[in-house]
Amino acid sequence: MKDWRYLLAEHRGTLIALCLFAAMFTIYIANHPVGLTANVVQTASNKGVLLAFVVVAQALIVITAGIDLSVGMVLVLTNCVASYVVVGTPMQTALGVVAVLAVGLLCGAVNGVIVIYGRLQPIVTTIATGAIFYGIALLLRPFPGGAVNEDLADAMTGRVFGVVPASLVLLTVAMLVLWVPFRRSVLGRGAFAAGSSEVASYMSGVPIARAKLAAYCLSGLFGGMGGLFLTFYTYTGEAAFNSGSGYTLWSIAAVVLGGISLYGGRGSAVGAVFGAFAARTTGDMLFVFDVDPLWQPLLQGVVLMLAISIGAFGLFRVRNRLDWFE
Image 1 (cartoon, rainbow, N blue to C red):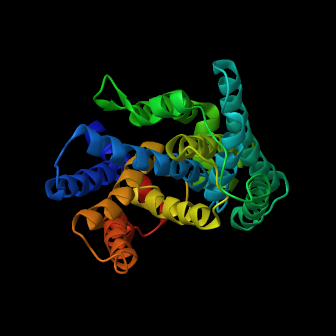
Image 2 (cartoon, helix red, strand yellow):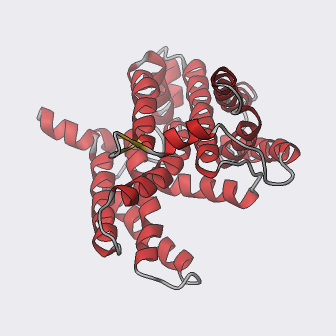
């Protein structure tokens, strides 16, 4: 196979997700009352980036052939924590940000330790830990409230040089600093290998346990970033069960939309980001078409299902899992 054909096959899912998002966003902008403006792009970016952090967290687990049903609750928990600690002087705010990210990292580590060393199924483990995370969030914030450093929040949800959404810059930096080095590292390759065939990877000397633990920790860190950004976006903390559950379900759909195989071992967090933006745009499209709110969940689900079907069309041609790598 020629190099370009190999690269095209390797990044097929990401390219499909990018094209779907571009098509959906074009339709959205073409029908928006004010068209393409900096404010419209900023709002769409903030909502998309919030979902993208959660989707990347989910993608890291799906790559290892697992499913994390606690990512939404990690978002909720870190949002509640941030509403307490990301306040005060610049130094106090910085320490608060570190504390929130540390909480997210700890949540991911707890999931990883139980799954890897407790030998429990990821879906069962994360149902239980998600309930625990939500319980802690509810203890912290039985009622919505709290605050956040408004200067920092405005900077993270505003625009750089008055044009580029700061949230996109934040997401790009996070991907470059965290995802790219992980993907190219031994642990990153081990996570993909574990998703493809854990037994074969183990027999080949791949550090499976460390690779999967690193993936879970990084997943928790991205979930913590999502909770922190949610606090920047809303200026408050809230233990919202429906919100956490909704983000969890949407993260799974967006992961598939981003070209990541639920069998594990194939995909990219970059594709997951485009999947998140495409999934987020489906709701915006229904808004600009002035669809009755009672019909929006149904139509949004139909649009998303069609988009996912396009992204997963290759599955119909797969006779066995090795065909993915031909």
